[in-house]
Image (cartoon, rainbow, N blue to C red):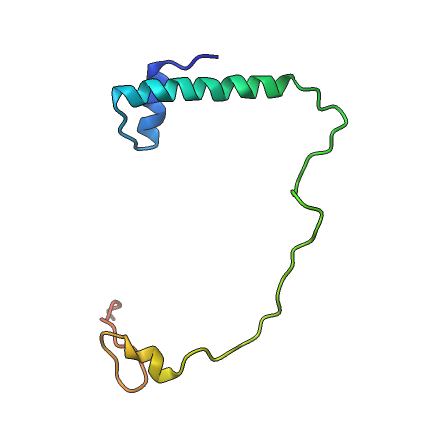
Length: 96
């Protein structure tokens, strides 16, 4: 299957890409190769093949949530541009 210049330009526009003429030509060739490969994959007989959901047979390994104090309250406030003794100070964004 071949891809024309208009198709590449439309896809580039939708992706908000600015392509040079050389990049358009390269992209046309790349997209054509991709579609040719997909056409070959469509020729493969997959009758009786189970869909693959996960790449491994293992289940998710999750760690237990443990609360740990990593930094002190004072250390958290050290790099704040503005703060008082207990809190970060930020500009008011909600008006009554």
